[in-house]
Length: 96
Image (cartoon, rainbow, N blue to C red; front, side, top):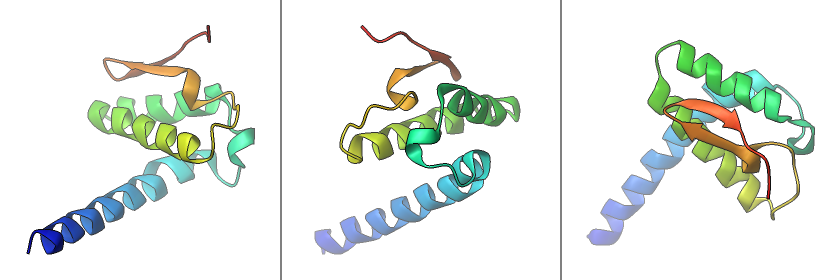
């Protein structure tokens, strides 16, 4: 029974992430490949969500984008690895 509950939660989470991807992230970056997405693109995406009063969703979208890049094998990209969320406002950071 526990496995069924976990499977339902995973399906709901996957649907939730897919909705965010389609509604906020893909809509903003379009058909760009991950390596073509810049920090400016990601900051613009997060600010657009924040401006509509959805600060928590902006933070979660940043988490989703980071997970995608991490899953992709740690390819060096100019984007999500160097953006921090501070109170819902995404700010670029400098790698050390």
